[in-house]
Amino acid sequence: MSPSFPFSAIVGQDDMKLAMILTAIDAGIGGVLVFGDRGTGKSTAVRSLAALLPPIDVVKGCPVNSARPEECPDWVGVRCTEIVSRPTPVVDLPLGVTEDRVTGALDIERALTHGEKVFEAGLLARANRGYLYIDEVNLLEDHIVDLLLDVAQSGVNTVEREGLSIRHAARFVLVGSGNPEEGELRPQLLDRFGLSVEVASPTDIDERVEVIRRRTAFDRDPEAFRHDWQAEETRVRKAIVAAKTALNAIETPDAVLTLCAELSLALGADGLRGELTLLRAARALAAYDGAAVVEAGHLARIAPMALSHRLRRDPLDESGSAARVQRAAADVLG
View 1: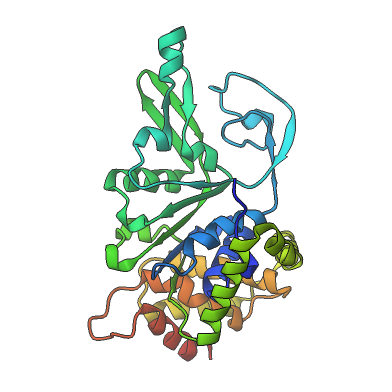
View 2 (view 1 turned 90 degrees about the vertical axis):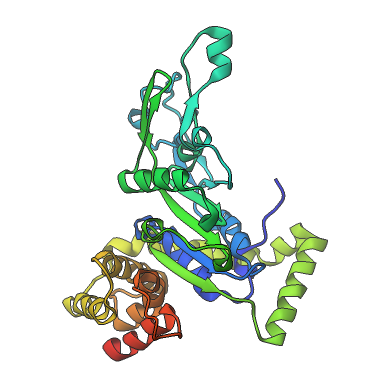
């Protein structure tokens, strides 16, 4: 596998990088949607994130990355009690993928050669306890979208066909990227992403030059470039691990809960998922910052990511949903 570009070496795109870091701290935030121009580092950021994530302990040979032997599904033929450490999985879900490839299916070769009904795990099994990445998510076929919605809701992948009845855990952070000019995302899937970020090509000359400089250096000698950024990568990785440890101890004053509700009401956001996500992300940000208490400033920093994709369209407002959230946050949060 070719070395990935260091996550911390990505120039600019601070909101995108922060959103991904927050999901690494608290997977319950619900994933990240990154929409924007081509060539703005969306795919690079997702693939680079894998190197920053702490490894996970899994049962050796378990196709769904179970943490303990008793959690391995019954259909796994080989039983093992050995625990090994592996990188957090980051699995690509390509466009045009078949349902069998996503959910898993009967191993046809084993069925034909040995007459055995053996389940061959799919991408959802590989992504359990990790990340599932969909590039051009707005172009995904509807039946695959429906399948992902069901699994994202339940956290369980169920396969009932070809004489098989299979269930296994499928809890993952969903990361999608795309270009809005190529089509919109279905509202049901859009709502499943905890955070949404819009990225654009840099307009600052110095920033664009730095992008070219770093990319050229990486292409010339990837290992030397990664070595130069190793210290910064280690710093970010340690900060993520420390934040995960501190997360449960972060205090959330009642005043902050009130601000979450007031902001969502001011924006007319549907349902309660927006403020719940806003609060979780603010807690993760506070932990990442080394703070002990969630403050209004944390809410203001996260609000556009957590709420902008949950707003109803306003035909009289051409400024965009993120700008609407920023204005409301300034009014409510001060």
